[in-house]
Amino acid sequence: MIRQAAQLARFHYAVKLSAVSSLLLVIAATVNAASEIRTGKQVYDVACVACHASGVLQAPKLGDQQDWRKREQQGFEVLLNHALKGFKNMPAKAGNPTIKDKEIENAIKYMLASSGFEQYVSKIDPDPAAKQTPGGNKSADKKPSQKIGISSVNSFNRLMKSSAEWNLPPAEDGIHDPENGGTHMLQPPKQSFESLSSSKNGNRVDWVKALENNEISPRYDRLSDDVKPIVMDLNIVREVKGSMPDVVYPHKQHTEWLDCSNCHPAIFIPQKGANQISMAAILLGQKCGVCHGKVAFPVSECRRCHSKEKPLKAATENKQAD
Amino acid sequence: MSNITKNSLKILFAMLLIAPSMPQAEYGDVLINNYSEAAGMRPVVFPHWFHRIRFRCKVCHADLGFQMKAGGNQINMLKIIDGEYCGACHNGEVAWSVESCDLCHSGMPGQPTQVHQSTASKLATGSKKKKAEAE
Image 1 (tube, rainbow over the protein chains, first blue to last red):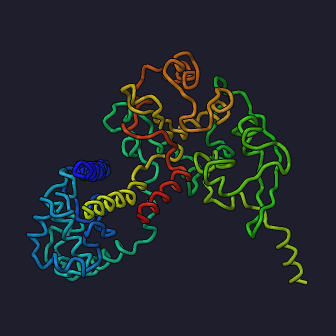
Image 2 (image 1 turned 120 degrees about the vertical axis):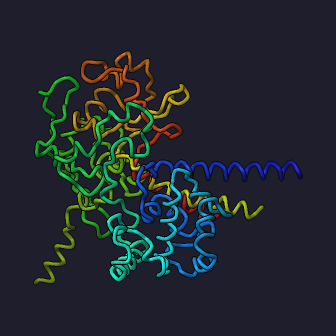
Image 3 (image 1 turned 60 degrees about the horizontal axis):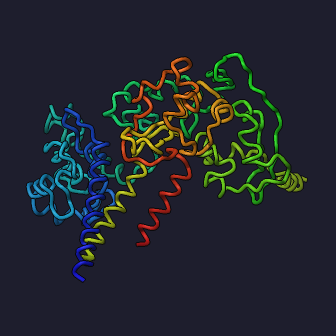
C-alpha cells in the first residue's frame, strides 16, 4: 500500500516535473534574452499567455475583472512579489528567470489594465516614446488601453500565424538548435521565397506557378541542367459524391515534378475506377495525402482540386433558366 | 493527491494548447532522428523547400530511391559516404560533402522523426487534446 502510494507520488512528481520542464523549454525557446526592457504586452505574449489567456491552474484570466479583483485588492506589491517569487501554481517569473523584474511588473500592469482596472491604464507604457511625456497624454492614453483590452481578448485570427511568423530563419524556427554553429549558416527561407509566386498555405509559395513562370529551374537530373522532364498532358476527372465540384487531376503539373513511378502503381493503380480515394485517407497522409498536406499544397485549398462544377448543377440551372 | 493529479493534467493540457503552435518550422521540413541522437549527434533537419528549388521531386524520389515517408529510408553515414541517398549529391561535387556535419545535424535534441507542419500531425495533436479534455 505504502509502496503503491510512493510509486504514485513518484509518478505524479515525474509528470509534473516533465510538464514543468517542457513548459520551461517552450518558454525559453520563445523568449529571447533581449537586452531592452520589453513592454507588458510583449512579455505577456511570450510568457504569461500560456496560462493567463485560458485561465488554467486557477490563473486569473486576461480580460476577466472578477478573476483579478481579489488579487488586485491585495495591492500591486503583493501581486508583483508573487509573480517574481512564485505563488501556488504560479511559477517564479512564469518559469523563466531571464525575464527582468521590470518586465514582470510591466506584464502585470498590462494584464490589470486589460482586465478593466482603469487605474493601471496610464501606468502601462506602450512604447518608450510615450514614457518621455508622462501625464501629458492622459486622456489620449485611455482610448488605446481599451483597444488593448478588446484586441487581446477578441482578436481576429487568434489561432492563425501572423505574417511575422511565416518562413522564420532556421535559428528561430523551434526545430533547429540555435546553439549549433551550422544552424546559422543555413539559408533563411524568406530570402529565397521573396522572388517567388506566393500562396496562402504551406511554404506560402505557389510552387507550380513558380515553375511555370521560370522563377525557379530545378534540375530533372542529378547532374545536368539540360535534361528536360517527360511531361504528360492528360486530365483525369473524378466524379465525387455530394455537392463538391468534381476533381480534375492534371498529369501535366505533376509530371513536371515527378516520375510516373512515384505514384504508379504503389499509390495509384493506373486503371480507371481502381482507386478508392477519400478525404479521410488524404488527411491521414495516404493517396494524394502522401504529398498534399506535407510538401505540396494542403487540403485546405479545396478548389484547386475540386475545380469542375457538376454537370448536374449546370443542367438544373439551365432548366430554371428555361 | 487528486489535486496534484488534476494539476499535472491541467499543466499537460496547457502544454498541449501551446505546444502545437510552438515549432514554427518550414512546411515540409523533415526531422530525422532514426539513429542520430543514439549516436551522440543532433538529429537531422531536411528542408524540402531548399531542395525543391534546385531539384524536382523525381531526382531524389525516383532516381535516388528515397521513400516518401519520414524516417523510412534507414539512412546512415556509411551509406552516404558510399554515395547512396544524400551522398549521391553531398559528395563535395554537386553539393558540400559530409565533412560539414553540423549543417545537416542541426536539429534541437530530443525531437522525434516527423514531417513538420503536416496536416496529419496537426490532426493527431487534435485527438490528443480531446483525450486530455475527456480525462
